[in-house]
Amino acid sequence: MVDDYQSGLVTVLDEDGKEHRFQLLDAIETDDGRYVALLPVYDDPSDSINDDGELIILEVLNEDGEDTLAAIEDEKLFDEIAEIFEERLSDLYEIEEMEEKSE
Image 1 (tube, helix red, strand yellow):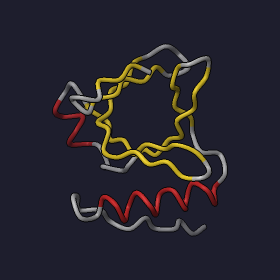
Image 2 (cartoon, one colour):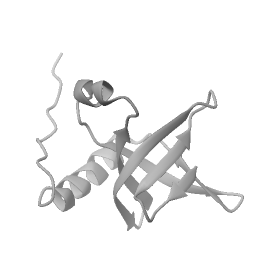
Image 3 (cartoon, one colour):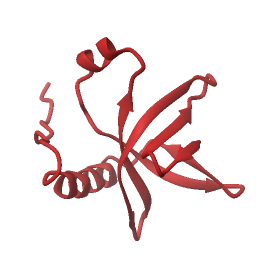
Image 4 (cartoon, helix red, strand yellow):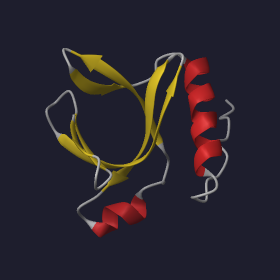
């Protein structure tokens, strides 16, 4: 993960080695770990229009002295962390409540 915290941009390498840029909206630390809320940054403005604007919430892990980002595997923990971010960011951004998908 390459960070430019001054500009609020984070570059993440996926498992295929492809770079993805995100705007760092918020970061928190709980008893369970460290987490970040990100929004994708696109080079092509038309990609931004097609984006659903959904927050990407990842866990920050420190491996060999380097921060890496990982998906939160525990669904209950993910929901708790997402709720914290939604509350913190709702004053700054227009955030719609996450809807449960029923099957």
